Length: 125
Image (cartoon, rainbow, N blue to C red; front, side, top):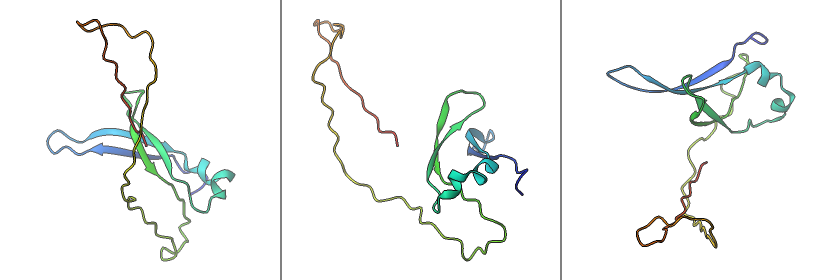
């Protein structure tokens, strides 16, 4: 019921048969804020969002969840609710090139009096 609905908490757990399940992280969504927001109600198809997962024992996020939120009235007919295809898109090959033209102030750390600098890259969706 709106107003008065509590916040929606979505928690992700690691199943553990022997020692009990472990909380990975959780995210909290204020449903009233969404439902009464003019910006959120403009979208016919709700946008996909990336929400950080937090654990109570850490200030750092524990990962992300890709999701969208729809709030449907209880009077809506479940046969008329649009079904969404959420299967992953097929993987595509691509090439990324990283070129370092110049570097400065790398300390000579090797026995030969040189340094072997290198670059690491990461793709974060």
